Amino acid sequence: VGGGNRGKYKLLLIGVICALLLQVQPVEAEQQFHQVRPGETLFTIAQKYGIRLGTLLSANKFIRFPYQLVSNLLLVIPQDERASNDKSAADVIEKKGDSASKTGYMKGNGTGAGKSISGVNSQKESASAGTGKKSLQAILEELYQEYRDIVFLSGSSKSNKIALTFDDGPSEVTSNQVMDILQRYDVKGTFFLVGQNVSQYPQVVARMVREGHVVGGHSWSHIQLQKATPESIAREVADTENAIYRVTGLRPAFVRPPYGSLNRDGLEYLQRNGYKVINWSVDSLDWKYPNDSRQVLINVFKDVRGGSIILFHTLPGNDPSGIIDTVLPQVICSLKSQGYRFVSVDELLDLPPYK
Ligand SMILES: [Zn+2]
Image (cartoon, rainbow, N blue to C red; front, side, top):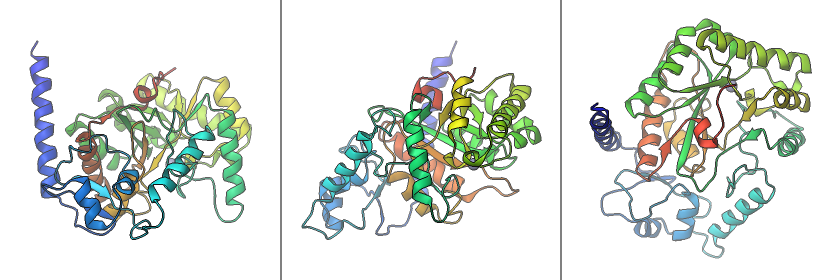
């Protein structure tokens, strides 16, 4: 009783917070990024930067309602394409996208993330390092293609749902910081947990589940599973599951391998034991730019669209993350203004989160 009214009230409150936030925390205008001002349209913005409308749209695939630009919405202004009038950059980007989806690598009709192996290409969460990078990534890409029934990078690009995911927790400060923000905006997230941290901060994991977030495994000791033996992969995964089970009574079906890296033995093990591999299609690179929220926002907005799985981190330490404080509300508010809903990965992919 009264739940409906309370829900409406909460939605209204979130709207007000978003409006305030987008106003009081303006991101300074710079070339790579444009913050929409009252009265501006996509057309006037494209004109201002001397780019085609199609180029602007291609660089901002998250735009669902071109005529509903709210003030302070963030737009990526493609730099390379600027002032190149001879060739349509929009065409180039679209072709790239086609080839990505033709490989079938992008799950769920990914109309191309621009880069074909999103989900395995960040340095922090990436298997590759130094030379031999391409072959390692190529092997992984082939492997993931082969096991595409259990490997997911994103949902359907036709959907208006987006999933926020947070790796490396639980941590006492930043996991709670993220949950405070998600609670404020009434958003559910997905946390991929390192087993040894679970046993250290069980109360944080309990809060995740209590507040409706989904938890999955991220190995016991954050090892690179691509290089691990079958025995140690099985142990890393099972120990993490058991640690989460002891705290929550739930056995996660989702695994995100550290760096997005796995090998055939690992995939076989996960398949036999009913797990799904959840990687990502948008890498915020938040760990790499701890003091540059602008860059992190660009990293998100240049790739995000319907069905995206966005990668963030909740790193250990005693200080709250400035990146999380600035970026997360901006991402949530801007994308909500274009009609997106933030859901946990199980809802995005329509898969059961627990065994
Ligand atoms: Zn990680």
